[in-house]
Length: 306
Ligand SMILES: [Mg+2]
Image 1 (cartoon, rainbow, N blue to C red):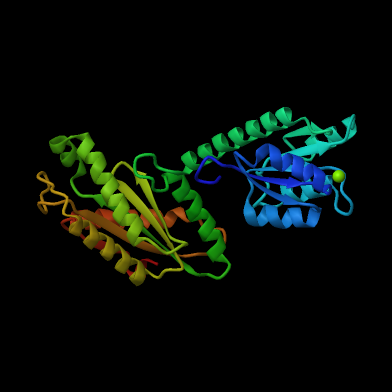
Image 2 (cartoon, rainbow, N blue to C red):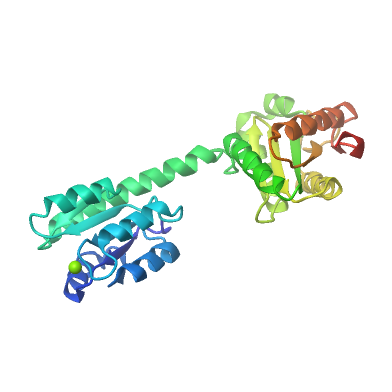
């Protein structure tokens, strides 16, 4: 969805007069793209990611049904709502379109107020769905990925890297003495602290394939695909330093007068039929060791434990 309130509508019709009519209905409120054949429609749908597609059934060459089938079979376009434009009294076509995954249909001749409302309805539904999808994988307080996304990403990356036997590293991190921080300064300051630390984490864990997540409470997790233990430990050390540099005052810490964090690092050599959760358990052991050894430090699993 575009960031402003304009949606992007793809109109597919072989008759320029229909495209003109439909564009006229929407172009004040929304961005309208158009294609006059199926092939062009598929290209545009994949590249421009429209929010709604208005699709003529009757077109020479690739007809609307074929276009719809292809759209629904491709991951990039499967969730884009398709509204069929059908001929007068074409009830068979309407049924077939809905079977193929279209969300609605409109009849020719085009009735502008009806088309406008039906399209608007689908735009609103898609916005709500997109927002739910985002919320389901995002931590509301910090905006980082949530634990669910962390676990899904871990399994997916493990499966992907198992093909090459590549390494995947995990960092687990706890903010030191966070409960005393909250007890002393209150939960509003506690939430501010979580957001600040999250921002630092997000900035430091910055390669495209990396993921930084809020694992729960004051605990964070990072996934670093194709990263050896030593490199992951270096990243963890940069995170630790950046949190120290934030200089958030922490009157209740026993290790510093500012907020610090403890980090555990472990590496998995990905193999088929092996659960990636093992690496989280090992990173957790290292986190526990970092705390036991005095906090505000990074501990990494030794090579013997690989
Ligand atoms: Mg036509």
